[in-house]
Structure formats: structure tokens, C-alpha cells
Image (cartoon, rainbow, N blue to C red; front, top):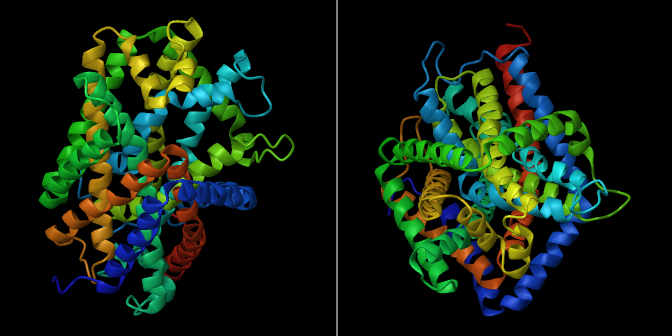
Length: 503
């Protein structure tokens, strides 16, 4: 066994996976009901806290970027970035949003069109306006703010202070300096590992049925849990091999290739689809979000109690919070040599732009089919599910089989790169020490690649989408509080080390 292995957190995390998965498998109906009741309870009582957290994260990041600490280098003074801007963007984007984005970008508008926010009449022109806009909001600046704060909180002590521990608890280094193996530090890392497994499991729970549906359409294989399990095995093998090869030869190359394929897919759909409608609707959607960003960020639906806020905004903010430490640790590993300002602006702008491109092209293409009467996407969703509605949308394209195959390949690689990063981060968290240029042991990274498949298989077995959403919300709640502590620790560390001078 590797001497660098943190046996305590390694064993405790595996135990939690077993304690959660086994009862759900043995009694799936009761398990599904219990997790859904938990979701309703947490969302109703703590939803307002998630909304406040999103606003606070953006405000703090803008102050850090344009305030006295924006030019602080994550590394030695004058050190150049380790990775090119293209590779850095590709890796952070694939790690942060890849697996779930392929599902939601195509079909999320349908839920907003059918049950819109702000008491708007369903399936009206006003509903169509919000349907083409709200996805941009949910995958925009606030999402990446939840990712960026943990990145800075971990990266600053890792590079600037030279702490040889790449763990989530490093974000609280201001208080835990010299106590990296203490009980509080281990507890913080344990909470992070559980949140990551819940968040990563949910992402694979969204993307796996979609990939299975695409493969069924291309091959004629019958849809079912067996095919979904086969897709999980395919994804596990892909990212196990990639994570075994390491950061430069595996994750970086896979991310670079998939970014190019994804951009080609978007260009194909834009050119082959209703280009003018996509352009006009996208511009209108961006304007709607800009005009209403404050209202969308603070709306908690206190009067109509429609459930939109709890079902969508709270779910998304919980997803980003649960995923935030994982993305933060991974982006830390690839951000040596960049300034605090470069990391903040890069994550907020490039991350938001990347997600927006998918929603503007794929989402508005699917919306156009509904509005033009070419494909009744809502009827397909009602009769089957969102995955079949996505296939039906792509069937409307010329060279539809090619488009579906390309979409399938990009989805598989996005899932693989997401779990490459998750496996890498879990292995880092369960290691005692890790220097800036050092990777976790190969067997350790590959082990977590396999272990990560257990929870999504369980979620798909007992109830699919809603159960996956619930696991994210439950896992994110403790991270909400530890994230606030790490943000305070970052600010105190910067004040202590750099004072309050301006650039």
C-alpha cells in the first residue's frame, strides 16, 4: 500500500459510499421517497441561503480581481503560466461543466417554457423569452463564482506559501497552518470527498442515460439499465486510462481534443439549423439576463410558491457549491504562474462564455423546432423523457446520424474528462503530501475512477433525475459553510502577507 495514502479519509469515504448505496439498492422505492422528501425540506428552509451565497461570491471575487490583491501571483514572482491559455480553458471547462452540460443545454428550455418563472403564462411568448434566457443565468457568472472562490482559497497557500498538501482543507490554511493532519482538517477533507462523490455521481447520473439513448439510436440496442451500466463501464474505462496516463498526457490531451470537437459540433448545428433564429434569440437572451440579473439572483418566489426557485436555482447553486472544491483543487493544479486577477477573469468570462455557447446554439435550436411546429419536443418529453427529446431534436438536422454520433462522442469524452478530474482530485485528497509538480499515485487515481461509478449506478437504479438532484443538494449544505470559512481565511491571509496597498 502507498505510504503517502491517507488511510483514514480513504477508508471513511469508501464506507460512506457503501452505507449510502447498499440500502438504496436493497429498498429502491423507500430510498427514492426518502431522498425526495429530504430535497424538499432542505430547499424550502435553506434556499434563501444559497441565493445569498451566490451574490456574496460574485461581490468578493470582483473585489479581489480589481482590488489590492489582483496582481498577486500564484507561484513565484515573475513565474510564467504552466499551461497555455487554450489548454487551461479546455481543462477547467471540461472539468467544471462537461458531463451535465450536454444534457441540460439542449433540453432545459422546455421546463422553463412549460412552467416559467415570475408567474408568467406557460407556453406563451413571454415564457419563450425566459426559456431562452434562464439557462444562461444558471450556467453563468454565479456558477463560476462558486468554482473560483475555492480555487483561490486553495491555490494561494499551495503556491504562494509552498504548502505541500493539495487538499480542500488547505483553503483554511490561515487557521490550520502546521495542523494539516489535525482532526478539523481531516473532517473538512472528508466532507469535501463526500460532496464530490455526490456531485460527480449526479453528473454521471444525468449524462449516462443520455449517452445510452444516443447509442441505442445509433446501434439499435434496447434501452434499459443494462445499457446504462455498459455506458458507465465505457466511461470508467476511458477516464481510468486517461487518469492513469497523468495530467499532461491524459487529461490535458483529452480536454484539448474534446474542446475542438465540441466547437465543431456547435458550428455544425448553427450552420445546418436555423442560423438567423439562433442568432436573434441568443442576442435577446443575453440582453434579458443582463437586464434582469439582480432580479434573477434575488428572486426566491415568496408569493406564488411555484417551486421554480427550489427546483432550479437552488438545485443549480447546490450543484456548483458541491462541485466547487473539486474544480478548485483541479484548477489550482493547472494555474501555477497566473495572477489572482487572471484566474478570476478567466474562470468567470471563459467559463460563462463556454456554457452560453452551448445553450445559445443547442438550446435555441431545439426551441426553434417547438415554436415552428417541426418537432413537438414537449410531447416527446411527456411521453418518454428528456433524452428521447434530445434525439428527436437532432433527428431534425440534415445528416442527423452524423450529428447524433458526434454529439455522442463529445458527451462520452466530456463525461470522461469530468471524471478524470474528479478521480485526480479524490486521489489528491486521500494523499498525505503532494508537491506542485507531483501527481497522486497511478493506482490511486485509477481506483477512484472506478469507485466513482458506484453512486451514479445506484441513483439511476432507484429513480434517475430527481434522485440525482437530491444527492447534490444534500452534499452541498456542509460545503456552503466550509466555503465561507475558506473565503474568510483567504482574505485574512492576503491582508497579512500583502497589506492593503493598491497596484
